[in-house]
Structures are given as C-alpha cells and as structure tokens.
Amino acid sequence: MNQQLQSLPIYKSNALVEASYRLTPAEQRIVLAAIARVRRDEPITDEVLYSVNVADYSDLVGTESHSVYKELADAALRLKRREVWIKQEPNGKGKRPRTLITGWVQSIVYIESEGRVELRFTKDMLPYLTQLSTNFTRYALADVAKMTSAHAIRLYELLCQWREAGEREVSIDWLREAFQLDGKYPAIKDFKKRVIEPAVEQINECSPLFVKWDQRKTGRRVTHLVFMFGEKPKSKSKKKSQKKTAPATQPTEKKNPGFTDEEIAKAARPGETWEQARQRLEEERRRRIEAARSSARSVVGLARHE
Image 1 (cartoon, rainbow, N blue to C red):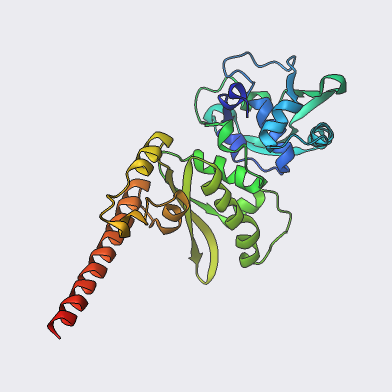
Image 2 (image 1 turned 45 degrees about the vertical axis):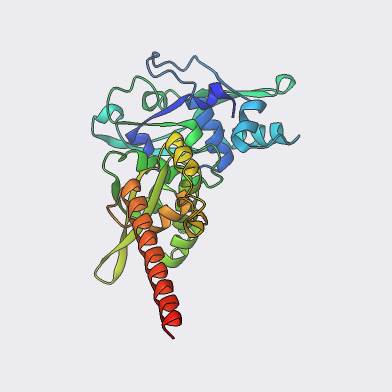
C-alpha cells in the first residue's frame, strides 16, 4: 500500500460502526479508501468528491491485475445501491426518534482514462464521518487492508470501539442484524464456522490486535459471544526478540525461537495480555526443557552406575 494512503486514519461515528449494513470486501475497500480522505474537521457538505484510483485499490487488494479497474468500477456501482440502517445520532446524542435508512453515496463519477472513480457521500451519511467530537472509532486503514472477509472488517471495527476495555460481549441476534445476514447460517455451528472463525482468524493474521472468543448461554441456548483482545507487540519489539538467540552450547533452546503471533493468540487465556501470554508460554517451555534435561541426566547416571 502506498505510504500516504497507509498513514491515513479511518474515523467513524460509533453509531455507524454499530449500524446494520452489508458490503462485500471490494465495496468495503472503496468506502474505507474514500473515508480515509474525509477530513475530520471539514464542514459537513456534500459538495466534495472523494477519489479512489486503480493504484489505491491495487494496494488494498494486493494485486496489479489488469482487471482491477473493472472490479473497482463494478464495486462502486453496487455501492450506489447499498442501504445503511442507523439507529443512533452522531456524536453520542442518543437514539434517533426513527431509524435512518440511507445510502453510502449519492453519486459516482467514472473516469476510465485516468483509472479512477469519484464518490460523493450522501448528506445523511456525512455527519457520521466528519465533525466528530465524541463517540467515534479510529483505526488505521492499513489495519484492515489485507482482509478478504467483510465480516472480519466489521468485527475489527466493533472491537476497536472497545479497544481500551479489551473485552466485548455481543448478542448473536444483534450481530446477525448488524451484518445483515438475512437468515443465513441459522444454526449456531454454521454461524461460528462461516462468520466468526474466519473473521477472528483474519484479525489475528492481518491486524494489530490478537483476539480470542468464547460463547455464553442463556438457559440451554447460545445467545452471546464474548471477545477478548489486546494489542500485539510493536514490530520493533518483535525484531529485538527475534535477534536474541540462545548460545551455541544450548542447541535445544536454539531450536525453539520466540513464539509466533499466531501461537500466542491461540494459547492466550481469557483476561491475559499479549505479554502475559508470551511470558507464560516461555516459562512453560523452559520448565519442559529443564524436565527433559533432568530426565536425561537421570538416565545417564543410571547407565553409568550399571
């Protein structure tokens, strides 16, 4: 992704983060690339056109295919028809007296000779993207750029909204409505397999967060999902830990470098921070190594005695 686009943050009103809508990954990329260019302090006006070009989209997709412009144009056209159901006012002003049903964009301009499209957000949508003073969610466009699951992007936003808490519990019925699944995956096992598990896997793989999740029952029925999450270590810390290798006299430890992000995410216990999980795993491994050495010494001693 080009550095300029990568450095741009996404700002969304929490009301929009929790709104009910469905976008494909391609449509999400276009919306987010346009939102990244909305200035948070600019006046609320629908006069501005936000440009997304083939280079931007290729960076987000991670490909330079010749079909990128067609994919970009087709996704922009579908985006024109998408609805958003919003139940909250922007800036934390509480529930709307009526649910607002609006679109993302009111017009699209195709400029094929320059390989770009221009989007004009609807007037109803703009208050949820600019002039935000409170109750908004912020994250970097780079955090979700490589995700290929629309559910992963949505879930990531919902977790970022509660980033300081490190835990969020949501009703499954509410999540189905927010993702506009329209009756898909009615069986909880299918819902987990097709929606939750792939989304969590991509968040762990592509984003700065690591996530674990559990389910909660009301009576005999699974009604809620609980997500526990935290920040992964910064890349500098990761590089330092990778450079620390064991002395040549300890080949057993040298064959076991630091744990990967994926290993830590899978092994982390509810309530543990990333660092606590890493330290616990390293301590458990150290104990196993010491136990193996002790056992080996015992065997050697017994052999000598015999």
